[in-house]
Image (tube, rainbow, N blue to C red; front, top):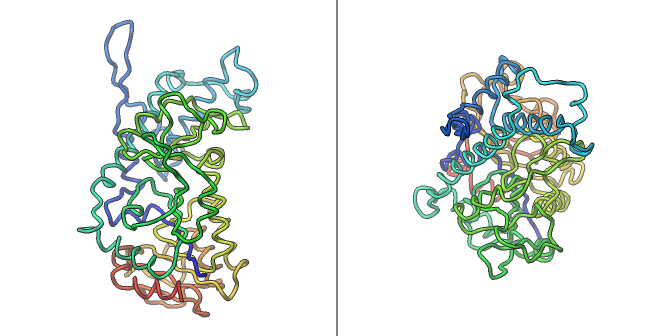
Length: 403
């Protein structure tokens, strides 16, 4: 039975209104922290997130920081703040704390750091909900829903997404995500559902969802589930109220790692142990091993963990592989057959394309082409963006991946 694996990156949602990383970063940096001063009984407004971002920008110059860099910095600052307390035990002391000391105490204000982390996650969640709530699969976004309905009418898919929205769920009628009704306002994850259900399309949120949350009352499954296991709510407003019910976790390296409904920051592997993440990653890797066909949409190849998994496709399937990449090249007039000359794609993406094409020079043409096929006709890349590619080549892509 043919099944196709798909991975949706941030670029997969841009044409349906999803924000780019730069948009989320701008929104996060603009958020001012409001903190109560008991001495003056006033609310102080502190642009702490932007101040941290400015420090990172200076350090990364000429490149700029993005919201995940900022969150990672906040986690690290919290780790040191906690570790430098005299009575903190070893497991909460980051190793580098023994070699460093603060040169600006204001960046180690525990309450301000906590507020900044909450503000950052809330801003990201609100931004995702803004467009997710406007998604219209039967109206303006029907082109998106139609592609997925057509794809699933031919065979079942294993769809992994790095996006926090639920637009893919809104596009199709039936799917399996491992969550089951338990008679409460949220659903509980059951990993056996993903293993036992082989007849439906599966949806795997590898980096979380705005609808994930924690129980805000006594948890009846406290002896079965782990503290950071996530439950699925129907509404963002209900889920987001529970996001900060749990304390922050600590990684084996003694660093703070916020394991939550949306996985952000740069300690992702430390945050993937709870349900559903551990199960989703297992099922994604299993799909890559078992399915000879792979569709990658709007992914910049910035996650080294995922890149390592997907680069095994040629090793797993050889000449039976079928790989399609949908991305966007913004400047056709600047096209060159030499990636170094045109500064695109990045090193990680180029390495994957070369492996998928089984060709060290995968771009043979000196003139821009909207779609490029490997010499052995086993892999393709489309450069026109998601909406244009779905409209012009959607049927052909589905046929290629399912035939």
